[in-house]
Amino acid sequence: MATVSLENLKKSFGKTDVIHGVDIEIEDGEFIVIVGPSGCGKSTLLRMVAGLETVTSGEVRIGGTRVNEVEPMDRDIAMVFQNYALYPHMSVFDNMAYGLKIAKVPRAEIEARVQTAARMLQLEEYLKRRPRELSGGQRQRVAMGRAIVRKPAVFLFDEPLSNLDAKLRVQMRLEIKALQRELGVTSLYVTHDQVEAMTLADRMIVMHDGVADQVGAPLEVYANPQTAFVAGFIGSPPTNFLDAGRVGGGPAGAQVGIRPEHVRLGATGKLAATVAYAEALGAETLVHLRTEDGAAITVRQDAGEPIPAEGASLHLDWSPEHQMVFGADGRRAG
Amino acid sequence: MAQHNGMVEKRGAGLWLTHLGLIIGVAFIFFPIWLAFVASTVEQQDIVRPPMPLLPGDQFFENYSRALTSGVNAPVARMLVNSGVMALGIALGKIVISLLSAFAIVYFRFPLRKVFFWLIFLTLMLPVEVRIVPTYEVAANFGMLNSYSGLIFPLIASATATFLFRQFFMTVPDELAEAARVDGARPMRFFLDILLPMSRTNIAALFVILFIYGWNQYLWPLLITTDPEMNTIVMGIKQMFPSGDDIADWPVIMATSILAMVPPIIVVIGMQRLFIRGLVESEK
Image (cartoon, rainbow over all chains, first blue to last red; front, top):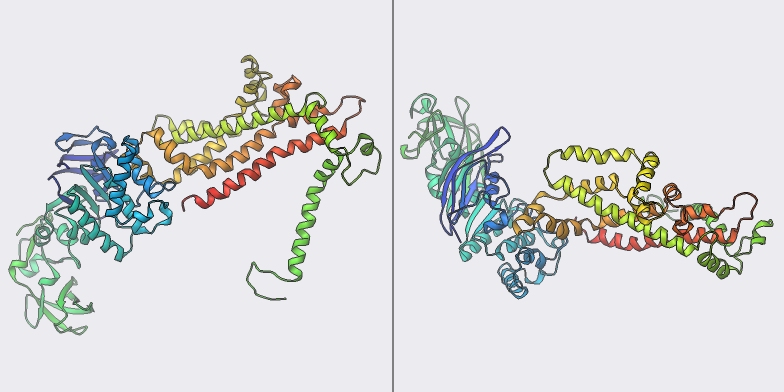
């Protein structure tokens, strides 16, 4: 168990800068999710912490010690990979025990640790099987077991659930969360899925083009996004953006962001719009509208409210406290 | 006759015709080998006097024991050992060297990596026959004439096998190497514990091919060995033919030919089992 600090961490591949300086202090036992679209540098950031990528400049500290030049095996970390990266010719037991065997842990202790991890992950009856004889979810568990048995100071997860189907993903998400709570190990988790980020994280880092746009608790980030990108990326359906000039919200070039659940439809309001179509999802209804100047707006309604007909002309309204103003540079302005 | 019964299933006359065709084909290919076997079980006079017998005679044990213990120039048993050492040496040596060089080329970033790869690849264009004079010169200067090292080493580098392993290693996901790195495996440990077991199907296939390649070497052993005790069996058969008007000892020569065929067959059949097991067990 340990703290992790990233200090002005930068990475370039040749002349291309991938990460432009990330700073964060991760507390002992904290679950941090790094979220962002593909190509934003989130995996690279994780791999630098793991020691699989060299650090161009800046510093990575684990437990207060600088580890920039330390080999992955000596960083006291364990990593779970997207495609599991299980050794195909080894049994589940050997897969989990491999790291311990290399570390010359006594046979009896290896046995005990693997058994404990297998019990935690419900893998006891599969210990003799090969990875290809397991389902996707079981393979994912083995990959996690391999990380657990090493009793590392930090867990690193690189999109561990993206190869699973939707249902299993939800289940494994809960298991990962429960496991991390139980073990209390500092964790860094990379994902492009904002739902995973929202549900798992103690704090999340929203990455965008190699910059950490915002660091904070999920609900805080959701309620109070610091950039237009974060507002658009976190939340589904995404935040609606309107030209600030049209709704009288701010200076020229600025945008007003308003979340779908905060927009009300009615006969009067701030802005006129036409209903394009409505998606009834059962518990809620998503109404898609178009304003006069062509901007697309999504409104989230409870199922109880009436569903407007297609082509109906309505007005949009919202209360000023839900309005988020972003300047021309994308930063929060009010 | 059932029509449209799937592409594989065939019935009635079609089935018999296919089999007949196959049987004729097999018989056609097998006939010379059968003749050689028959010739190795009869006496010299039976072969020389037409018509040649088509059924085995009663001299099997005599001919084969004569071949194995005394032969014509050297005992065939001795030649079998020589061929075995050479073929095993070449096959294993080639596999070890090409595994290691492919490992280096795929997993390590070092200066001139591409250059080295193409240099290795270039040797594909230079088979033994092309470079035979300089190679002989080198082997002779090293005092490797009439020795196993002289038989093995000049043939041991293999661009084909290196290339094959390179292609295979490139299909191994990078994450596997990274997982091993996180697990604390140093490069050679990763190579031995993970890459090698994963390559065993390829190794088995290559071993079969390379063993037969080594076993069937003719020109190089012919040059490098002058002592009959160092003859390999494939070239030894040729050495058994008499020069001038001497009478060829056909039963012994034929027995030698049959014996020369046995080890490659054993290797193919023996490795086939491992091969299939490897195919079934290896990951998807």
